[in-house]
Length: 423
Length: 175
Image 1 (cartoon, helix red, strand yellow):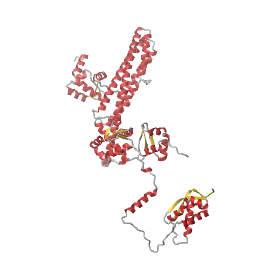
Image 2: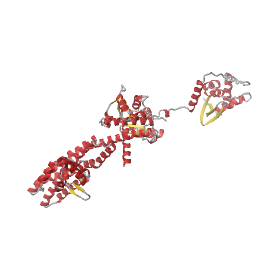
Image 3: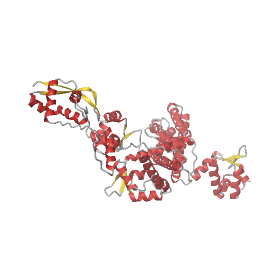
Image 4: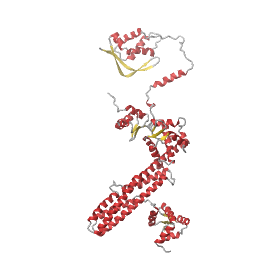
C-alpha cells in the first residue's frame, strides 16, 4: 500500500462520516477506544480496520485498546470544531512560558539567541491564542447545549455541571485574560508589545529590528483576541452558565420540595422533616393585652345566656336579711371615723377593720364586696373632706400588696398611706 | 423622663410584627436603615426576634413560623416554577420581572402535573384570591387595583434562596 499524505487525506475525505463518528466516540474516553468498539464502527461504515492501522490513524496500545495520536486529535478537533477541554493548567502553562521567554529576552545580549527567543515567543503566543479561542467557543457551545438540555439530564446534574464549569474553566480562563489582573496574559502581552514597539526602532541590527516588528504586530493582534474572548466570557458565557446553575438549582429545590410534600402525604416522611422558609408568623394575637379574668368572665356570661329558663333568687328559710345601706348617715359616720383615725397606715385594711368593728355585734358579720367598695369610695371624696373638715388628704402608694379576704372575694390591693396635707 | 423613638416607630413595629416585609422603596425603610442598631436591639430585647435588614427589604425572623403559610407559599411557587420551565421560560427572570393574572395562575396550578400537591394545601374552599391577598398584605406580592393581576416583590428572593439551599443539600447528599 502506498502511504502518503495524499492517500491519507483521500481516505479521510472518502470516509468523512466514519471519521467524525470515530472522533466523537473516542473523545468521550480521552481518545482511547476498545478494539471491539472500533471494529463495530468499522463494520457499520464498511471501513477496513487494517487500513486504519496502516495509515496510523489509530495506534495499538495494551489491553486491546487503541488511541488516536495527538496529531489527529488536534487536526480533527479543528476540522469538527469540537475541542476537548483539558484542565485549566494546560492553558495556564502558556502564561508561564510567555512570561519566561519575555524575561529571558530582556536579559539576552547575544543576537542569535534574541532571534530564537523572539521566534519562540511568537509561536507560543500563537498557540496560546488558538487555545483560548477554541476553549471559549467550546465552552459557549457546551453551555448552550446544557441550556437547551438536549441530552435530557436532570436539573441536579445540570446544576452540578454548570457549577463545575464555572469554577474550573470559565472563571480561571477569565482570570488569565482579565485586563485588571496584574498577572494576566493581557498584562504580559502589553509589556511585550511595548518592549517590541521600542526595539523595532532602537535595536542595532536590521534583521532583528524586523523580528521585533513581527513580535510587536503579532502581540498587538493577540491582545485584541484576548480582549474579544474576555468580553465573550464575562458578558455571555459566565452569565449564561450562572443562570443555568441558578435556574437548575431553583428547579431542583422546587421539585424536591413538592416530592417531599407527596412523601409526607403518603406517610413515608414526617411533616416535621419538611424544610420550611422561616416566614415570620403574624403575631397580632400574641401581643394583644388582656386581663386574665376576661376569659372566665366571658365564659360565665356565655353559659348564663345559653340557659333557656330565667332564674330567680329566692331566700331560703331562716335566711337572715343583710340590709345595709351606705346612706348619708352611714357615710358621714365613716368620714368622721376616717378623720379621727388619721394618719392611716393602710387604707384598705382600715376599711375592712372598720366594717368588722361595726358588724361584730350583728348576726350577719357579712363583710362583702358591696360594703367594702362603698367604704373604699371615701378615698375619692377629696372635695367633701375639704369642705366638711377643712382638711386636705394626701395619698401615698407604697410598694407591696395587701390581701383582703371578703366573704365573696379575695382582693389583692395596694397599700395606701393616708395623711393630712397642710394647706 | 421622656421616651423618644425614631420617626414612624409605631408603623414600623406594627408592620413587622404582622409578618410584613418592609421594602426598600417604602418611607419607613430609610428610618429602619438609619436606626438599624436601635431596631435590632429593640426587637431582640422586647420580643426575642431577629430583625433582618437586607439591601432591598427588611423582615423579622423568629423560631416559630406559620407552618401552613410557609407551606402554601412554597408549594404554589414550586409548581409555578415547574410549569413555567416546561413552557421554556426563564423562571427567575419571569418571576422577577413579570406580571401575572390571578386567573392564569389558578389555571396553571389546577392543571399542573403537581395538581395533587396543590390540592393538599387546601386552598380550594377559600380560593387562591384570599391567599394572594395575604401575600399582598405581607408585601410579598403587589396586587393591582383591580385585584386581577399582580407582581412579585423582592421578598420572593427568600424562595429562590430556599430552593437553592435544598438543591445544595441534595447535591451534597448525592456526593
